[in-house]
Image 1 (spheres, rainbow, N blue to C red):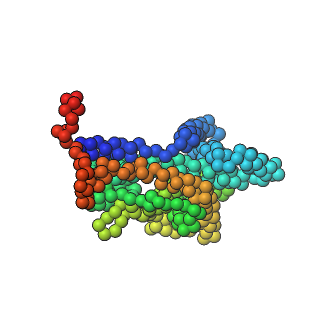
Image 2: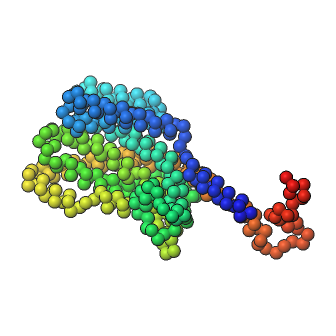
Image 3: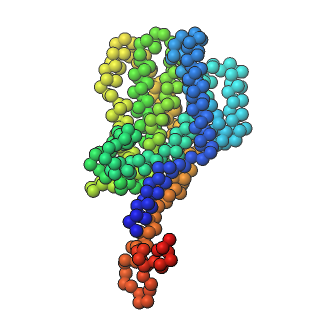
Length: 367
């Protein structure tokens, strides 16, 4: 009996490590992103090497085009292909009427790039959610932590003296509508990180003297597209209230991730000193203008990606995670059998189950 229970436990751990929610479409989309990212990286290096552009900064629109490619496919998959054709026709129409190219780039990267970012994030969540839980849950059972374990300990801010084996989540969660509080909270965290990034880069004097204001804004806008990769992946842990039960209070993984992001992304004192130095080089109005533009573009990017995520993707993701909870945390069948037999008063004449080989017929014992 103990051997059978150990085999059942081992099989359960293997199921947890291999549990993957991604469909064939998700896998194809992830492969498309990796292929597009590789192609755009090669194209970026090529345009710089051939002298088409003067620096790597000018090639950032080429590098970020991989998100547009994935966003185009994701947009068509979420809606209909003719909506995609209408969007592209609208861009062509605006271009024919003389709208500046840089404004059209803002439009294309905001809509299609936003869809691309969210599609990649959701695909990664489907692939890695239960694997992350399984690795965190097994940390207390391992003497030496592997590199993956150390990364998770760092990102989720998990203390050494907590038993990670007791991992829980709200496995009865049902999302009926868009969670306004979660949406605003995620937007706020990404907005805060993005504003400091914008201020630090856009007030760089070498950028201000080498490039036009419009091009600097475009580059900063494209860099902001990658901010949701720092914020959105952890929102699913908040939505499902994933936590490690503790003796006094539960350790929630989302709060640990937020704490780590704040430590990494918000060096307030250096940013403040840098801004003061920029005010001395530029006028106060110019610095205020850059900060204002950083706030505006961060609101656009974070609002677009967050609304797309919570309105169009998160509900299906939560339903799939909840549906697989029993596979991740299966019911211990043999333990239930033993528990039922040991508990309660015996009924007269009821046969008693035996797990000993000696009680089996001789024909079976001889095999």
